Image (cartoon, rainbow, N blue to C red; front, side, top):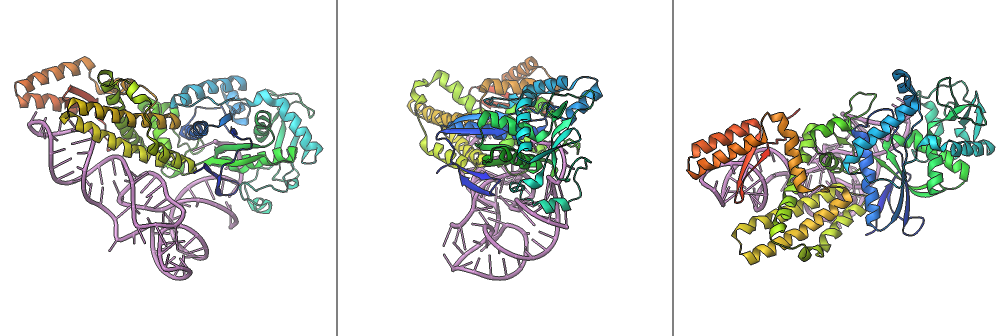
Length: 492
RNA sequence: GGCACCGUCGCCAAGUGGUAAGGCAGAGGUCUGCAAAACCUUUAUACCCCGGUUCGAAUCCGGGCGGUGCCUCCA
């Protein structure tokens, strides 16, 4: 089965055929850097990170470009309100983007160009658009004449006359037609400004992506991505600009991810119902957020809630438990040589089939859960096995864990050391519980003494004391361990 | 008003023509001193409703109802 991708342009899943054999050019609209990233930004970044990783897994040489929009009205406004410059604002939020988003296990794109580094390329494109009659100068700026581009609306399925009927179009006295959009704006005093044939000014929003994608990927490239909300007008306008300039097809496959909702409503700054990545990461491991984000298909809306995050955490914890077990058991029992080259082709095949069907990560997680149950079943057999059998079981567990890790590499999960994951979670949460780790260990020892005396009342008292504190004990053959009590029922 | 998308177990979520994956929660059980964890069993005669096409539909078509998004900055 070959890779099939849902193409917004045609509204269908299509078999993916790259322009150049074995290579893929992909451009994804990044963020406008005027504030901290919220979960919606995280979703878009994670979704395309998974796509990037999977394309590479398939053996493609991928050129992945994701831009920063660092010149924009909102940035300017922020700078004014802070009394700083827009360059400072942009720089700061680019830093914050790295700080907040990269812990989610994001691989660096091939290039992360900034709009302000490509002003000349934009000017060059605008010039051609004017020469070709697609754009006109007016009031110190330049506008794209939407009516001149025959295919306008082909991506979003909109028709020009229907758009005109809509009552929500920006009014600008200089526009010949209300649908026209700005390619170049005259700068007001104090705003960032660049020299241009039309005087000091700054670029409109849409032209930067046309200019940068053209520069790094050429006239026609394979994949262009972004959030659903970018389909219109941003991507529609990009097509008008780029195809206006080159006269050739701009993009073969358009991929758009769905929104993150809060109570079935789109998360957005303007609605004020957003959570920043930063505040979520205070309470949850980054991989929990990542797992939550890829537990649904990338085109579906997902509802963000504490309950759903807790559920994701529970699932992730289970995987790290078996990962930890395999790691610990291997130290004493099986040399890695015995397991490293083991393959599990059937499972990898299922994984590939799921991913090939428009990157169905939700199905992949389902398969992974099946596998996890198999592994726990094996693990449960160990106590009653001979040492020969134990070794055999461990080898099989390692095969499965190998698959988990390999799939994890592609979807960006299970990438941290199990010890670190488990201890890290404990350390972060234990502060909230008002108890010290040494105290827990002391009580465990005390309780185990009681258990040896068969003083069950004392033992149970200690256990329930700890449970009230939020600490759950687990008695195993290897001794007593503890974990932070996590209930998906608890709400915040 | 125009254009899209969506409606699957209490909740989350795959499945888009061949007879309903997976997770959470629930119930019973194994293990355990008792628990916890894990495992086992169990939980949708059925996919918003009504028609139609078909040997056969959650899946296709038509009509409702409900929800969301885009048409303004937005991942």
